[in-house]
Length: 279
Image (cartoon, rainbow, N blue to C red):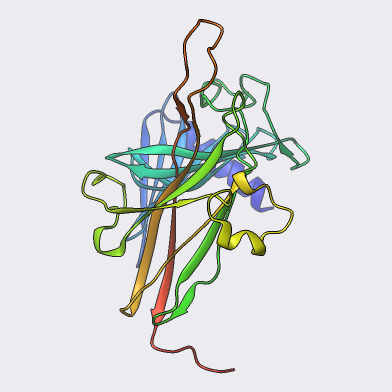
């Protein structure tokens, strides 16, 4: 019944061109946009907008959050015309715009695909070109030990690589973590002012090898940070794959000194308190 009602509402809105309607409530404003190329609903909250694009049959094409029209935020969900989730894109606000950080492709059953072969799976004229350059799924894992810490207790995490972006050479991974006193801005716009600590994978970090038996040491890096003040914290940084040469001469007679992969950014919000109460 809800789907029928939604389709009915959308049909009415689509009957007029360039239509914008608003509905206000105590803590949000909802706007409906319709023109010749798209129909979307934007819900304005205090700190972000929630955006939904719709197919003409009433099903959702994509949905996610944004800070403004240029800055997508977090995970956006994309579905085909039949309502099957086919793609998840993770966006970071980045220097006034947004940056595609990771992507996951799925088949109609919801199983994760390593690679999506189709040029487009969004078969409606308005959305058919909504594709990105990356068709490979990100399988990397990033883990943090907790969301609430006691004072003088470290936040600990690790990154494990499963999406190997450097295939021609034996690659390693490193994590670069911003210090609390010189942290990244929310959109990573202050890159030149940030102070970073570097954490290398287990081929160099031999102390932590004992905790990860069976792991590929060149694909896993642990990292951490201590705090001496209480309150809400945001840990920001990035990891990247890399290869340091030099190598033998390549097919063109050139030596390769190094190969550096793209940065994958992350942030983790948590709280530091004086003490954790006993249960």
